[in-house]
Length: 465
Length: 63
Image 1 (cartoon, rainbow over the protein chains, first blue to last red):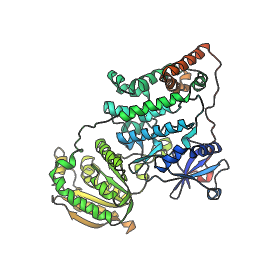
Image 2 (cartoon, helix red, strand yellow):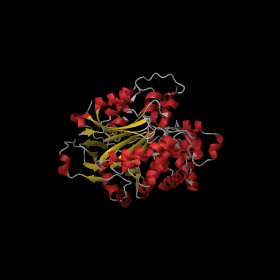
Image 3 (tube, each protein chain N blue to C red):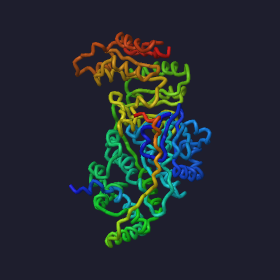
Image 4 (cartoon, rainbow over the protein chains, first blue to last red):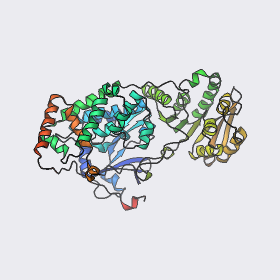
């Protein structure tokens, strides 16, 4: 049994895992809150349709096996989300969906006399392409006259990143990755032009909030208590939630065309090899059902889609935000089991937050059963300058089977990568690749592609042979 | 540097904003709030929520 290193902030509802199961230990007050929320019709309805994580209370007998402290009043068991992802790996449409789900659940909660004490996008995860709210401990009774304490957090971690992306085209992922608490109003305004003040959400939530924060920073009394005494009521919260939902629903980000957004459509060799690659991936994937598949450099997700027919969940990763956003939109509409993520393979998400335990490394969030690595290795070796043995070692460290595409130095795209570089890549050859692969994998199958310069390999980890 | 700044509550502005954008009723609330501030009433001590910490048992601590 392990207490989750990222759940320390909520001291009354700590998360722990045991085996494959996820649990939450509740204090007396948190248990009373759970009893209140679990009886609400909105909660039952949204749990049934999957927007709130499946949760059940353990019997006294079941929870005895955990030897928990006496202050634990009850234990909940949560449905396990297939793969934990973070907002700094999401595309615009993903963060937008997470914000909307959060607002919808909060609106229901407020009209039922409850509120969410946090407004963190980390409390929303994706089951495949569908958002699911996971922080049951966040539901607390709405105290009459008390404002929405998490409004600022909502702005800093969801609204401002979305507005930045939609209005100014600033990719929010790099900011959220380094600023885990989000983007303060004053920093948000530094990216805005004065004309943006007239766009929905900027003046009120940005400028006015920043100004009021500055004016009230020396207020010696409790603003919450004073507002209660002044007649604040929950109708103001409901009005604000409606307003925020309207702003976010209308937000749209139209990415510029990048070299990757039309990659598979415009290059003839890609089209020629594409069919053979699809057949190869299909053949490997259909051999057995896999729980988790990673597709590295997924582009438009065509191989993710093939894998998704034979896997529980496919994590489709690409560093191109536009590609990931487009794939998410199609996956979301079709409710597929593909979770697209923005990932730079040469700089994957690190362990960070408090003592480096709060947010996990990408590689520590679930071992893939199969890794699809097509059209990527030449970028890692020749563009990112990572030595080929190191790339193979990393792929092997993931622990799953491997489908790898290797373009030779005569391949047109490889030559394009090398055209302005000194060729220092003596290790870049099929023979060297295979000898490195052999250290970790048994090569099950290899196939040349129609272009003649590319080879597909299927490796099975030696430890599982 | 004023040491008070290290302790200021940056949420005060975001809380007031929720009333300020609440139409006529909200502006009345803010008006009453400002009047209270001007009168300089007693400082309030308030606990927003009761924390009931669940300690991690020593046998489960990883560090």
